[in-house]
Each structure stands twice: as structure tokens, then as C-alpha cells.
Image (tube, rainbow, N blue to C red; front, side, top):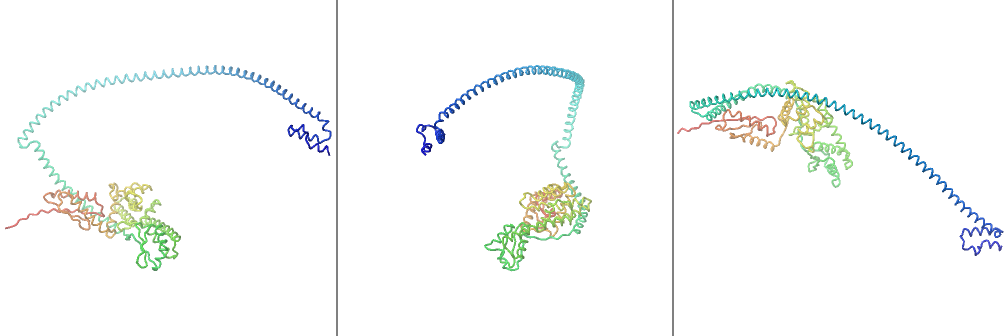
Length: 551
């Protein structure tokens, strides 16, 4: 046991050695007989260390010799590569020189050839220039001879002109002596006489032509127009800006208003209309300038009243259904219009726009019915005079197409209609008829004139349109103001609901011959400055009175 304790206790002499070495020595001591073998172990360890050092030295020397051999072989290889590079460079240099000499020789040959061709071309041009120079010389000689001849003729003419001027002056002096007028006085006298004669003759000629045209055209026009009107009859509905929705009882008004007005606000927001709920029994008024929105609101209200369930979600659902129904009605009305007029091949968007005109009015006249009527009348007029019937009906149906667009698109309905017709690729004749039906441009085709006439016939028919009193009075005042602006007009009166204007002229200012010209000028100014349905008759009156009293 004493030896076992000695094994686990390190001797004092090993206390300063590394821990690993101490552990090895301790383990060796655990085995019996370690102390006798300790010198041998130490000697082995020293031998191992000496062998390792010698191995390192030998390895380093061998590696050094190997590296020196490799370096020497690398230097030899580098020398060989450099020599081969020199040889390759010399061979490539010689090849490049040969190729360069060949290219130079080739370029020289081409240059010589080009120089030769240019020299030949220059010789040809020089020859042509010589010929032209010779021709110019000959022409110059001819011109010089002609100049000499002209100079001689001019001198002779100048001499003759001087003699003629002398004879003329002598004759003028003799005429002034005989007539007692100077040349300027005689000129003014002749001009005044000629002006009076021409005024009288032009007035008589205009009156004669107008009378003949009126006699010939009135009968034919009355025949054609009466036939067209007799064969075309349409129903017109006067529409206002409000719609009245009947209620089953007054209790329904509170349900439509809803708690704190939620239902009525929702309906007004979704449809864009104003709901007027007043003391009118069992009725609600829907107010809106847009008839499409008003119709949607009316249908939605009717559906809600029939259903009985009135709340925001239900209102939104019914408004969507009403919109779909109105869209379907618009499409159906457009198809009805093209079916009634027999105008086919229209773009689907044009059909929808025609259907929208079902909810548009002009002076109380339904625009869609008006367009159908114009289409029929234009087609009948075209058939009577032998024009293109289908083009006339198509242009008549589409002439108010711009009225289907709301106020969000700027421009007159004529300009909007022209743009829509161009967009959907209508013919040039139809586009021109749309553009000219209100004289925005001068009508250039028969179809445009027919559409203009048919539009005026449909608008001027008694009962077709209505006009408020203010606009009516304003139009009459403008008519009288235009007629009174001419010199020689004493008084003017608009009669026959603005379809005739009677004008009293001053007899001392306006002669009978000048009345015809004045009437034409007044009619032209009315056409240029005033918008009116149908036509206006300009009637001039001139009265000369002689008053004397017997005393």
C-alpha cells in the first residue's frame, strides 16, 4: 500500500515540469519496476528527438536540392520558349510584310484604274461642255440680232405712240369744247347714269328670277313636303324635369325617409337625384335634369315600394336592377329606331346612343322620335327627287346624335355628333349632313340639304315643340332689333309668332328698286345671326303720301 500511495504522489523533483509529462511519469510509476527503467525511457525519448531533428535537416536539404533542380529546368524551358517566340515573331513579320506589299500593289492597281476612268469621264464632259458653249454662242448671236430688231420696233412704236397721244389730246380738247364738260365731269356723269341703270336692271332681274323660281319651286316643294308629312306621323310626349311616384299610403313616406334619413340619403347618393317629399298625398316627386338618372330612381322606388323591405342594402340592390333595366330599355329603343327606319349596319355603340335619346327632349319634343321622324321625311324627300334614300335616312337618324351625350363632354351637339360619326366610321356624306344640318358649314350635297329641310319640317310642325315665354319674347326682340339696324328702316314689327317681320321703310331714302336688295340683305343677316325654327318672311312696305289742305 505504501507503493500505491507513492504512485499517486508526485515527487518533488518533477513539480516544475509540464503537467502532461508529470502525468506520464506518474502513470509509469504505477507499474512496478518503473524506477529501474527510467534511464532507458529518457534515453529513448532523447533518441526520438535527435532523429526528428536529423530528419528535418535531411528533408530540408533534399527539398532545397529538388527546388534548385526545378528552378534550373524552368529557366531552360523559359529560354526555349523565348527562342521559339522570337522565331515565330520573325516568321509572322515576314508574312505581314508580304501581305502588306500585296495589298499596296492591289490598291495601286485599283487607283490607277479609277484615275484612268475619271480621266476618260472628264474628257467626255469637257467635250460636252465645248458643244454647249458653241450652242450658247450661236444662241447669243441670235438673241443679239433679235434685240437689235426689237430696239428698232420699240423706237418706231414710241414714235407712233407720241403721234397717237397728240391726236388723242386734240380729240379730247375738241370733245370738251363741243360738250362743255371736262373729262372728269364726263366720267362722273357716265358712272352715275350707269349705276342707276344697273341698279334698276339688277333689281328687276333679281325680282324676275325670284318670281320664276318661286312659281316653279313652291308648287313642287308643297307637293313633296305635303306627301312626306302625310306619310309620316309620330307621337310626341311632353316630358318635364320631374317624375311623380305614387305611394300606397302616406306611411310609406316615413319608411322611405328611414331612421335619421339614412334611406333617402342612400337613394339620392346612388341615383344622383333629389327626392321631394312634401304634403302631396300618396306621392313622391323625383327631380333631376338628367332623365336617365330620374328614370333609374323612379324604377328603383317602385321596386322598393312593391317589395316593402326598405334599407340601404336593399336600396343599393334595387338601384342596380333599375340600372340594368334602363340599359336594356336603351338598347331596345335603339334597336326599335333602326328597325322602324330600316337603317342597318350601325355600330353597337351608336345603337346605344340612339336609345339614350329616348330620354332626351328638345323644346318638349322627344329627340329619338324627332330623329326617327327626320329619317322618314328625309327618305321620302330623297325618293321624290331621286337621291340616295338609304343615305338620307341614315343621316336623318344620326343628325342629332350629339344630344345623347351629357354635359361632361364640351362642344355643341353638332360637333359632338360629327366626332362620334367619325369615331365609328360613318361615311363622308353622313358626316357632312350632320355637320351642315344647322348651317355650321355650307351644305355641299343633296343629302345634307334634305336632312336640313326634314329637320326644319319636324321642328316647325305645330305642336311638335314648345318654348317658354321668356325665350319667345327674346327671339322676337332680337328679330326686330336686327331689322331696325339697317339704314332707311323706319319701323319693324314681328308678327305671326315670329315667322314674319313687316318693315316700314322711308320712301325718301329707299327707292322701289333698292327695296329688293334691302330685303335680301335683311334676310341674309337674320340667317347669320338668329336661330329659329322653320323660316321667317321678310315683308318690306314703302308708302308715299301727299297731303294738302284746302282752305
